[in-house]
Image (cartoon, rainbow, N blue to C red; front, top):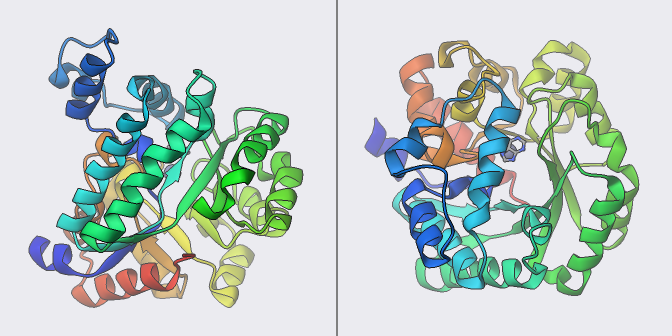
Length: 315
Ligand code: ADE
Ligand code: ZN
């Protein structure tokens, strides 16, 4: 089944480039940039990848991103991810990046963007992988800081397909970012937002009604609200679901408890994605494989999930 799933043409719509930083590359970049790390070796870093919730993961994820300093680092990170896409027949990808994670450390916005955009361009030219980049605001920071980030992005508007919203969800509802999303839409960006990962169904309503998102990232807690499920089905709003992430971050106790196939069978436009593959134990194919092993996902269901991902593209 793994080889069949791997060969299935698919799109990835929920992938944080900083979350694709494998420990081996992290150590190589630390050495190249002469940065001391708190972990002795790759194995001890991998050993730290045990999380009880989203915040425990984010603490390590932001620490890992500290090795990314120069344009070439962002290029290498993005290129390594695109090579994975090629190996797994991901023919289209819409990755996120978090500019504030880097600009707050003094890395200029253009350095980050030039590295990522250069690799995406080469991915199109040399690997045949199409893409659309999504600039994600950090929701644990203020709306004013998100506005300043949008200002930095405007001169490079054509480099992005959408803006998104990620980081610590609970306590930072979509409504906190209503004005910056209004402005982003007025400037021509589409919008997406993480909602209903750890946060309640109300956050999904807010993302739809206030931020006017084209997709919901995660959204698995929609299952708690029948009216919301009805709306997601009626309007065919895609959910970019990340099964391995949800189990690693204890959103579900075990993959056998995951609701993605239930949502699929009810008519919700769910897709399969890897979120932060370096931290959660697998890329897209491994996420599909986990659904097969733990939930008995059939080839027919896998084809529908893959088709959903192709249909839900923004770029
Ligand atoms: N940033 C990277 N991965 C994330 C996730 N799963 N949820 C929220 N923010 C993130
Ligand atoms: Zn995510």
